[in-house]
Image (cartoon, rainbow, N blue to C red; front, side, top):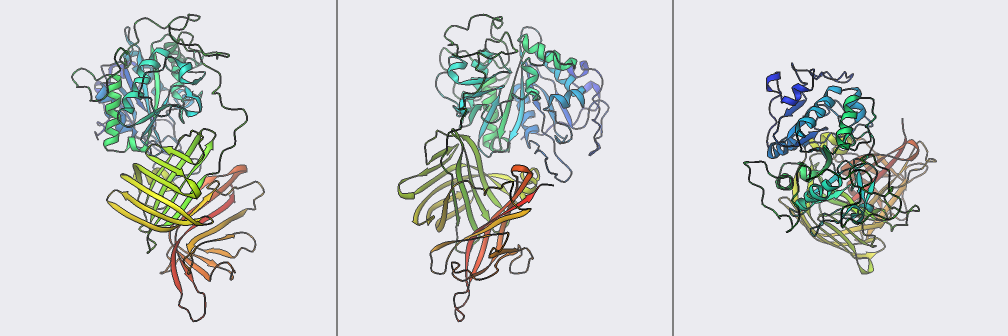
Amino acid sequence: MRDLPSMFSGGGDAPVWALAAGSAVPAPELATSALSVSASFPDWLTLREGKRPLVVVAPHGGRRRRDVRRGDSVNDLHTAELAWELAERLDAHAIINHGLDRNDVDLNRISHLSERVPQVLALLRAAVEHAGGGDQAALVLFVHGWNMVLPCCDIGIGLRRRDGAAAHAALGARPAGPADAGLFGRFPTVRRDVYETTVTGIERSLASRGISAAIGRRYSASGRDNAAQLFSGRHAEHAHDDVAALARLALAGSVDAAQLELGIALRWPGALREAFIDGLVEALGAPSGEAAPSGDAAPSGEAAPSGAAAPSGDAAPSGAAAPSGAAAPSGEAARKPRLANEWALHRDDGRDAQPLPVEPGYTLQAVLDGRGETALFAGVEATGPHSMAGRFCIVLADGSMMLLVGEGPWNGEAGNYSLEGFGWTAGHAGVLDIELEAPMIRYRRHDAYLDLERGLATSDLLDARVRLRFEPEGDGVGRLRGEIYAGARRIVVDAAAFVERGGRRASATESAPPHAGRIRVMVAAPSGAGMKLQSDLAGDGWLEIDDAPDAAAPLGRIRARREDPQSAGFFEAGIVARVPVWRPGPGGLLTRSTFGIVRCRFKTEPDVPVRETPGVFELLEVFRGA
């Protein structure tokens, strides 16, 4: 990992294009933070002058220093350092925010750039004009973070692929045209020939290194206020001179832009991050003096990605025929502001007007060891007819947890879910097979989700390999066997486990009382059979939470208010580990979902000693929003 250089302290050290941008960049007027400003630039901004027609921008590389508040966004950790290293490797110009909190001023919003920090917008314009001088078109790369753990890069060019299809970059021939690629949208930020060379070249280069790439898998960069849309042409009539000027440069074919949303595995220091940078350098062309990274070359006869230089000849004028071999899509073509870019796009993404039904999801929970020090919480679910989410979380009694979480395309096949390195298959008679070979993030604290940015800042990555099989023995109860390797830790699994179908979160509705929810405990009963204990929080529920800590249960207890005939003598459970997560619900409701490990105590008969057995628990609380 390369360190950012010290801040420019005088105009002589600044890039030529920064001096051409005019007056010094003042700190924005903020009520929440006082930013010191050097003679020329704020101390949260670092600039670089390059020699190639490339501009690398890290808008969200800063940090939040104050306590978290409701509605805060998470800054894109590690993007400042990564973007700087990428700019150095490519010999690109760079505008790097390494200190400003996006919750104070968001440098990825056109409205914030034009109204609150117009001098930063002027710097961007100056860098683009300087980079694209002569007959070369500039390429602007916005480097962002996506808080999925997966090794994936979501490429935002104002477009989406149909239903997230082809999220994993194809290793075969490049697409014949946008219709064949299933692209949809109205405001592309690149010309079509740049998509067919540079963008698809990035996909291929990353795929050859085991990194998936997608077009608009989650973040398409199509929002009107998104900074990448400065380069779609849609703002050519904007009241701000710099916004309008950048739009005109895009319409003239002088600049293209792409947003790169990087999963955690590609941003945290390590081999995958280096592989990502190598892939970008290969796709965009190594500068003079740097050997190109080893990797798959472009297929024979295919034009090499240009990096930023426009292909010979300008894009065809409005009304020109599509290039030979590019099939025009059927149906109405969208009106598009980039009149000279040869795109022909559908207005919408082709999704069904009436959502198709999807199968219920799966959740699996188990204590993995007899001492109750390690537990697994995992699941998959369809989030739409062609999309899915998956998670695999190991909670440890020492206060840490390991997690893989991701979302992506789904082929719609019931019981068959896969993401990069993660697979979940439902077989005959309720058998489940789970496989994982991917990085996991390790949080130091169980309360990391209460302030995700700070939780991420102290986390690290570890390699994981998992092979597990669940075999049912009753209604939602069975045996989980296999092995888990996570970093230096090896866990041999042979444990009671609990599987359920349906969404992972209980529904919260408008009619919910001001404080409602449920408690659930899953544990092997004294007889050895798995059992589930459940109680509503409201009304006369038979279980309650006692948050008062003591030496035996420092995180509180779950107590039985009265005996339940189905409880097999359960009377309390000391909480060993608890992971809280706040989520917004419908109608202004808030839910706090807490899960973790408990040690359950059973008393079946007066003269029989109390039996203690580890289990897992879920607590769902529903609140009216403030």
